[in-house]
Length: 359
Ligand SMILES: [Zn+2]
Image (cartoon, rainbow, N blue to C red; front, side, top):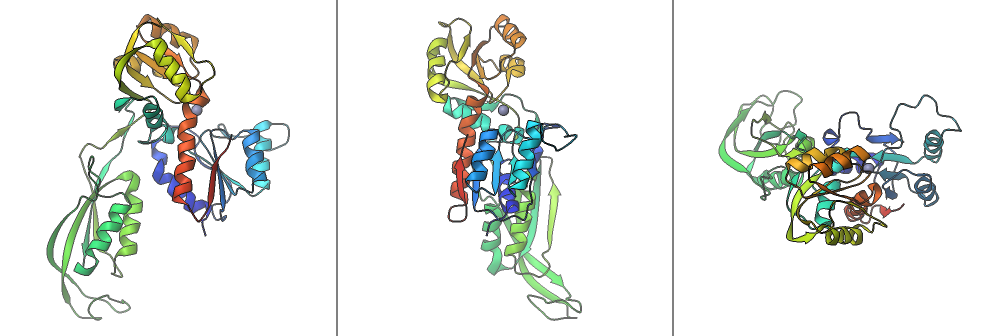
């Protein structure tokens, strides 16, 4: 059986909460974490139609990109559209979980999916806002459990360095202990000093996956009390932030690229600002309303910036400074990543829960 909290734990691995912008409204907004889940609906917005469809399909959990509750509600009564929707969701015992700017920033999230759909290579964050932290986890393991413990920790996200996974180091040594009264030792007996050969297994992990790595380590370790150390490291960890900048394989005119964006994102009428015949190669992108990041796009050397909800003065300032603009819509620049999230969850929970994208 899958519960809301099982799905939340999984979503937290996909887009950890700490990656969200300060004051963003994310996480479980409505519902009981212990509710069991057989059907999950995934959507960009917690709109009236998304809420109604989810309830009529019998979904116990709705996962949306945009929050329903952004500001503290002063009352929960009929007459206010947000409050009415919140009441409807709660009365049908459905849960609502939001992954917003954390899903924008995270590697493999909104910005990366948009960059890959728009054929960018050498992709970097546009705004390197926050940094993860590295930890070294050292655990002492008997020989017969070494591979199981290492693989479980790797599966939970430890030992990833650049393009390498399952990185670990181990040294053999001798551990000692006295099982006190009441202990149920894996080796030895109460009151007697034991010395056993153990591996000292070391693996690196980021703060985002530390809790998962520790629980995988404990669950797969044969000892009653697992001896382990966690060291904070000064190594520079990957930075995450909103938007991406990257290069097209070959130059094209702004007009040609706008037509390509229109096809790829299924935008009705993308708005184009700048000389349509200008050649573009370096492109900045941001899902949703990224127009305020135009200075970051300029300093990253972008020829054109693709995002939604362009504000009048941001357009004027960008054009003066030589940055062309494609306004591809707020919803259209975010939808591909939300569809991809639904597909990923459908795979991850196959046989346990049904997952579908709706709008
Ligand atoms: Zn948005």
